[in-house]
Amino acid sequence: MHRMKLPPQASIHQAFSADYIMSQMQALLSEKDDIIDKKSDVIAGQKKRIKLLEEYLRLANSKRFGASSEQTPPEQGSLFNEVKVLAEPAQEALPLVDDNETTAKTGRKPFAKHLPRHQVFAY
Image (cartoon, helix red, strand yellow):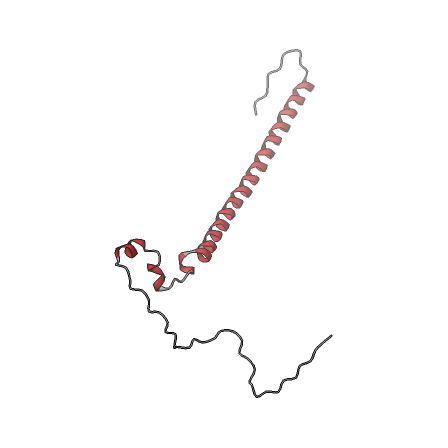
């Protein structure tokens, strides 16, 4: 440590106080450097963790929304192929349903006719 040369009128008491002040400032600076190093280590660890979590999120999103998660039927591949549709000749009209054929009714089936029925009115 270099001692500062004091003017001739300065006393020894002032010299000790100047040395004391310098040593205190150096101690504060080294303490500040230690705190900065610790915080830099914490920041570096947090950056690593953020990168790891971002990678996990990217993988989860690719599994959830990626192309492998959707199974497309083989006939859907030609659904949006407009060039192929425009290049093909017009198809024949579909045959009409014959009036003699009975079509299956949709909806609820009625009760059997042999079951007894009683009407009850609620007023």
